[in-house]
Length: 438
Image (cartoon, rainbow, N blue to C red):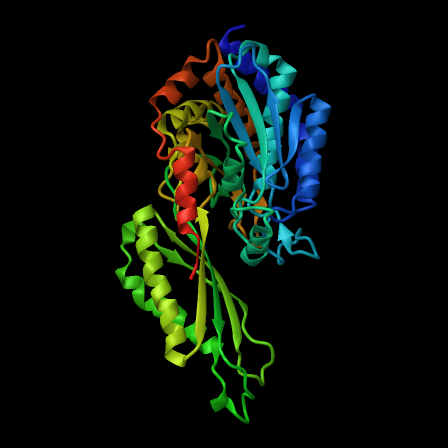
C-alpha cells in the first residue's frame, strides 16, 4: 500500500468512527474532573483501550493512562497526547454543580482526538505498514490549579511536581518515547476554522504566599492588630510598581488570587493567603522577575509589621515547538483545513506543561481555531465539531504515518537533527532549583 493510499484509508476509518468518537467526547465532557482527580475520565480511557485491544498501563502520576500499538518494527515511538483535566468555571452551563469543574479548555477534544487516531490506525491496519510504535497517552493535571491542594499531595509524597507531564517525566513514563504531538482548541472570532502552528509560550513559577498578622477587634481595638490583608494588598501594589521594569519581549505576568482573606468582618484579618504564577517568555526573565516580585511581596509585610512566607514551586518551562515536526503536521493540516487556513502562531503568553516535554524531545502543540467564546470562560463552546474532533484526529494520524511509514526515515531525521534543550537529568535538577520555602 502506498503512503497516499494508507492516508486515505486512515482518514476514512476515522470518519467512519464519528459516532464512537463523539460518544466518548460527550461522556468525558459531561463528567469534568480537576487535575490528579480524573478517576472517571481515566476509567473511560482504559475501557476504550480494552475494547480496542490496546495494551496499556494505568495509575501513572496518579491517574495517567498509557497505551501502545506496536508497528511492523519498533524503531521509534511517537506519542499522541490528550489531557484529561478540566478547569474551574462554575458559571459555565455544563459545569459540575459540586466542584465547579468544566471542560471549557478543550481537553475533552484532546482525548477524543487521541482515541480517534487509535481507532483509525487500528481499523485501517496501518500499524502493519509502520516502522515504529505509537503511544496513546492520557495525561493528568495540565491545568496548574488548586495549588494548595496539590502542595498537600506533594508534602504527602503522592506527587513531587504539581503538573502532570513533569511528574510523568520524573517517573520515567516518557523514557520510551521519542517525540510527541497534541492539539489544543482555540477561539475562532469569525470566519472559517483554522490551524495555528505552535511557536513559543511562557513558562512560570508557581507561588503560595502566606501573610501572618495579629487578630484584634476591628472596631474596638484595631490598634492592637496587624492587618494581614493590608499587607497582601500592599504587596500586590508593590508588584504593580515593578511592572514598568518588565521588558515587553519577556511577556512577564503576575496574576494572584486571594484564597483566604479573613474570617470575620469585625476581626482584623490575621491569616491571608494567595496563589499565583510568575510567568515569562524565557528562563532568565522568569528568575529575574520572580526575585523582584518576591521582594515586593515581602515589602508589603514589612510595611505593616506582618510576617510573610513565600513558597516558590516548580511550574512549567516555556514551550518550544520543533520546527521540522511542525512542518510535517502543517502539510497534513493544509490538506484537511486548506493551506490558507494554516498559519504560524505568535508567542503565547499562556503556559502549558507541554513546554517541559519540548525541552527533552521533539514536540508540537498546534492550535485549532474552532471555538466560540474565550477559553476558560462561561461562554466557551465548540462551534465547529468537524474541525475540533474529526479533522484534528485525521491531521495527527496523517502526521504519524509520515513519521513512521517505510523505515521511519522522517522520524529518524527529526530525532537526529533535534538538539534537546535539556537532558532528563538536567531538567529534573532545574525544576528542583525552583522549589523553595522562603
